[in-house]
Image (cartoon, rainbow, N blue to C red; front, side, top):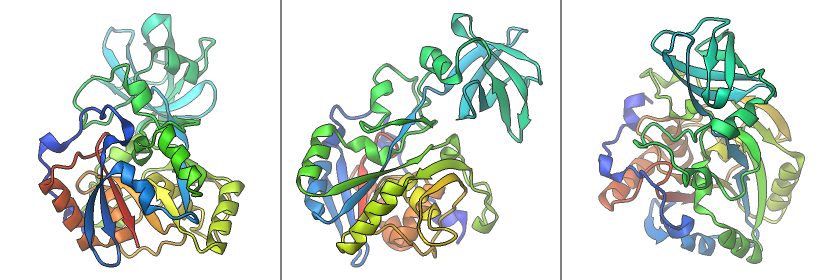
Length: 340
């Protein structure tokens, strides 16, 4: 298929700029993968779609305040977006400035902090934070939540909690696993009380999730790299679910990528590493039976993944239905449940 096959026209008014007052107040569009039948529901109805033998797999990554503003020695403004923390004092980052800083350049940051450019790794800059504080400590002190480019406002205090799942644990993402944003603790408790089990993976969502596909031929697209971990306890929980004939329900496309990456080259097993898995229509899913996800950008790799999971035509028809019904789109928007 071609990139242009995944284009759709979205009115700007449907791009959610703020979260709703309550996490569970969003709408939920359900798509039966077998029949193609759509149903308009509220997110609180999600629990009614679950069975006691099901397993929900969440991505427990924690979004870091990865955006920094500073100045070069010349006074020129610099915007930094940390892409990956390498170790306590080193990070890879996107750096925007009128002229790209060279190796050895010091970038002055607020509150007397600074970092130094060590070099380049393709289009990313290698930065060192050596002022006595770790990268994460600096970000927690002066960093800003890296809201997606389609949210056309500055981050505010509310985003520190709302652009974060209530179960976030492992710091490292620069974008939220947005399907998980719809859950509050009360709903999670109710799901557990129903007998539905939960398990976790970690995939540190990178800014590449917002990068457009720049080639028409999807076979030529180079997927961005993201770090992930599927722990042994999650592998065991999935095996137990299979033995009960339950469903493995991925909460978000990032959970899908982590689970499917762990089954990429052999039997499904605990895996720690990086993935560039690019899922397009024709892919055979090995682990995931159902998927909860948000609505994704036109021509994005995430829309391609969803179309691979539930069928190209049913998904594109569902998106048009969501537009016609005024659903809210993207990170702070409504959700979609794809199931058999």
